Amino acid sequence: MFAVVFGLAASSRVAAQVISGDLVGTVLDKTGAVVPGARVEVTKNDTGVKYETKSSEVGEYRLSNLPVGIYTVTASSENFATTTISGFRVELNKTTTLTINLEVKGAVTSIEVSGTAAALDTTTAQLQTTFDSKDIGDSAIASTGGNRSGVLNLSLLAGGVATSGGVGVGSGPSVGGQRPRNNNFTIEGVDNNNKGVTGPLVTVPNDAVAEFSLLQNQFSPEFGHSSGGQFNTVVKGGTNSFHGLAYVYNQNRNYDAFGSLDGIGDLTSNPRLDNNRFGGQIGGPVIKNKLFFFVNYEQEPFGSAGTAGAVCSPTAAGMATIAATPGLSATNLAIFNQYVAAGTTPNPDCGAIDWFGGKIPTAGLAVLAPSFTNYRFVTSSMDYDLSSRDQIRGRYIYNSAVGIDNAAALPAFFLPQPNKFHLITINEYHTFSPTLTNEFRIGFNRFAQNFDGGNFSYPGLDVFPNIQINDLNFLNIGPDGNAPQGAIQNTYQVAEALTWTKSAHTLKFGVEGRKLIAPQTFTQRVRGDYEYNGLQGYLQDIVPDSFVERSNGNAIYYGDQSALYFYANDNWRIRKNLTLNLGFRYEYTTIPFTQRSQDLNAAQRSRPDQLRGATSGEEQLGTAHRLRVFAGR
Image 1 (cartoon, rainbow, N blue to C red):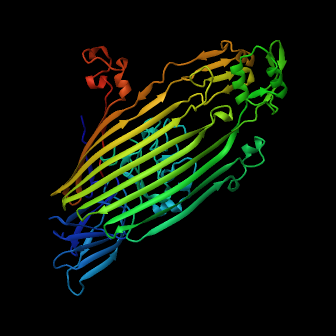
Image 2 (cartoon, one colour; image 1 turned 45 degrees about the horizontal axis):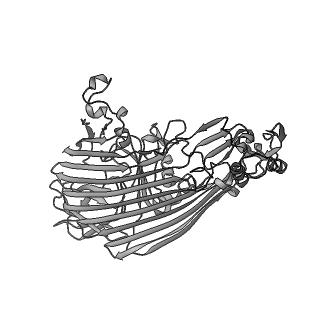
């Protein structure tokens, strides 16, 4: 069920952790000979937290699961002077190589140098682009509002990445010519994919992001789920000193040049565009060198030009004629008068309509549908370094996006459209020995969306329907024709990874389980659609002469799925300049629960020969198997 692909490399390395980075290298003396048993210690500059290990019998050392940031690296051994390298950066999803040279102890007892990572990373075959908080703050593309992509926009600066254009379905950019739906989005290692329309769910405000990385090509087997780009985001954490920030970003129509297309549309100025992002953050120590916190709050009211309605309504004179007409349905007339105002705007599509052998005049109904969404974001983090062997990292992110559902034709039926998001993750790292480390993660991601039909009442009916009057330019009386509908996606995630260095081998094993609970509800015309060719027929309460349908019930579709992933990787250093990289990843995912429950979607296990292309009972039932093949460099 799996394949092994071999790659050759010039050094023995394993790709970095999902939400952190690794530091590896060799300790040498001035002649180039290896120094076994050397003590290597790294200290994170802003928190003072220390991590340490010892070099192996061949002089190699490894420090895994390091939080991204700037470090001071110190190496020491008996009979050698201590070497200190300052300003060394550990990047997200990257294994950084640092060779440390020790001088024989003599006139000097310590040597200080400035450390800079090699410009060319030869430790992996993956194409990687990493952006830190300064890159994000300096780039205007990451601050573009309205599309809610945030720092993900920075991926367009990487080679092989383009806007989706006509490539195909999905949300997000196209990586390596693939469809956007092939991308994978994670925050702090937690799945952040919308299983319905693809694309990311939770947004991390730009100023709360510590680092963002995009992986392409043959990335490490610990990354899977999709064959396109791997979009990974980690949030900021607290430091040994209290620090805060307040910010405001503004974008509006006055900053933009007037477009020629707007001029063709008879506009004299740019249409409305108001995007204001403002927020603040604070972080610091609870216990210095051990326990840290960080909180960011951001609010963003975003509004754009509304759309004008093009429906018609009887003029004031027409309304008077209707009111004076006997024999009309009192209920329907009351509903019409309650929600439909007299037409006042000249509109060539609005002419006189038939009325009991005569005509009544109509005019355009002045309806301007607003367009706005109010966003709120809360991002928080906790880092607890119990000891040099144990670290705990916790994150909680909350998003709220409340807009307006303006799909209805009349303002009375415009309703709030809420979207709520939550993401929680706890990561625990334990160092059993300098050669054996473990990472354990639990995560939860929730998305809830609701298109409400409102609390409108229609006498004689159990719910307010959609009523369409065709001779009034298809005027619709009622809420959004697709309401009510809603979707919830709960993703539960547990992951375990073990890294073991043994002689010339660096082995990594990981397993991950996911459970998705995703009920969705949408039944077409569940409130009933009643279409009349003329207003007269509706007010007489006759049977609709154009179209009538009401669906029975409001079924819930359960998109629940279970998934199990596992992978293994071995970097075998055959000699100093030759490394063999072996690895595989296997993924097992069930099809959604409701589809499994439908008899016509499940093949009979006892008669597989009746199905063309069926190869096993599990495949006939829709279970999906995916093999993740990768190669190292």
